[in-house]
Image 1: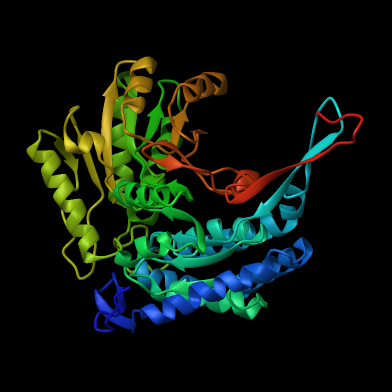
Image 2: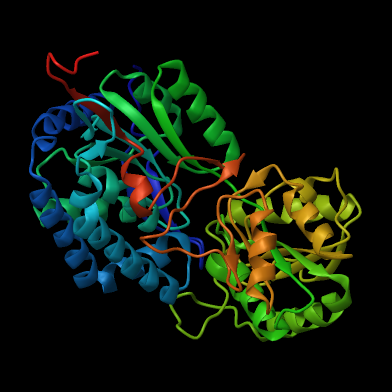
Length: 467
């Protein structure tokens, strides 16, 4: 491998005011090699470590995250700009996920008996080795947690390549694992550019890769993993449908839509990006949304009274503004917002686009910012058809006062998750993942712990029943 020059440090820039905060040197090839070797060596011991001991250490990570929550929440807000209240909730969620796998991991990984006519058989769930975890900036602790918690509990070791704009969040998580008592090498952070990922995936000591990121990144990672016959799990983009049926509580639906879309300044893969409303109630619903938009307080994300935070970076704002401009050039109508806010930092107005036509960029692409794509549809079936007319299939919502009707609609939507009368949410015990171009594999819930284990069949026979 070529030596990486330490002339392009990984930087923290506060998106609230675009001020530089801190820089970290990119790791040399020799440093990366040392970490891969350490992870591989640590696996040889970690895979034999009793599950109760693994669980004890995961519980300790959860305790430390709660204890250090004031520090962690400030770091997340400082580095990627989310509301402090959202950062606090993220830390609490992470602690709950670590506790969930500590409490349940041994049960999930227990041998599973199989019915067979003669003799006996069972599945033994065994770790596979060093995992490469590639994670984005929008939930700097949660993205780490939902891959690390199940897979470390399963007995694997992990190398993290985090997003380059959240280096302090990346480093402090490794510090917490060490403080919790994890053996050196079980979990390590890598400060490397994306250009080095393919080399890591090619390394025989890396057994699998998990990515949360964009559709192009997922395609690249899947191709590299496939080339070397390694398993991958991908959680990619989404353009979630938020369906409001004509019998919905419009006040609750509008509140959920606005809060859901403004969550993390719209930088959430499962936020309600395509709002699809039956035409008989569409105008009233839209008026409620516009009133709620107008009431949002934009400002310092450290201020707990702020409702709308900046986007994660100047580039993030510029990219979203380009998407809005392209949508307008292709015939979309601007109902609200659509501009940058005249103040320092990566701020933009909450925006509503309508009259978005099939074949245009906005109709198919994900917009990662506080932008609604608003659609009026004739009836329930038209809502289902529009929801499914997307390359993505991550989450979705259906609002109706009739649960049976809503569930029937949900069953017809091609997506990995559908929530009734709620935006797509997150809980340790519920699986998270999508279909179509939103990726494959599942995180959280019992399903996650089986993604990177060898489900080994062990068959017991006697001479009398052998076949």
